[in-house]
Image (cartoon, rainbow, N blue to C red; front, side):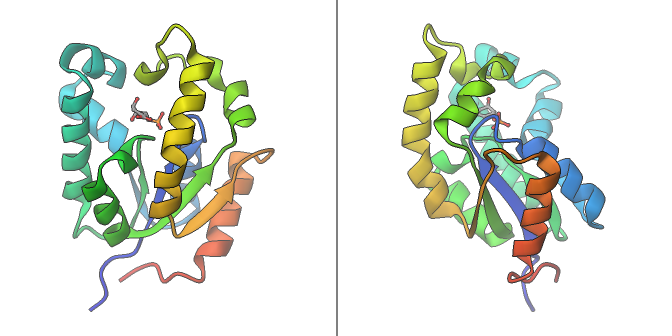
Length: 176
Ligand code: S3P
């Protein structure tokens, strides 16, 4: 018997994973799970507050726990936080869950969105553009390593990205 094949979205903050996940949910018959939403509801507080009250490591533990809890469930749309690939165990879990789709945004595209990322704890630094650039450089190889499919998000709407994913995913079996 085949394991469940979900569509798993990974990528940097601001690449539109949440919006694309909602569109994919509407266009498929699959449920959607968002690890940030799961963690936030577990702690009953926004992510930013979890970081400031308990620290990043506690958040990362909760992130891994959320991912683990999805194993063995039916196929779904799974939306992850941008840092999920920083733990090797998470990458194994992601790959077991299904087809891993990397929403890849270049620095300029993300830089243009940075003001809207004001609630992201890791960009609350004296120089957010520099932090963005450093994090992006460190993370890109991790996304590349984890992904089955890469979608370049620059100059595309969330609808266009979702359509591209659905078109590409046909080569990967979804469902049980
Ligand atoms: C993080 C990204 C955020 C959230 C948390 C940490 C990261 O999710 O999980 O602030 O380490 O890149 P988004 O990618 O949805 O912004």
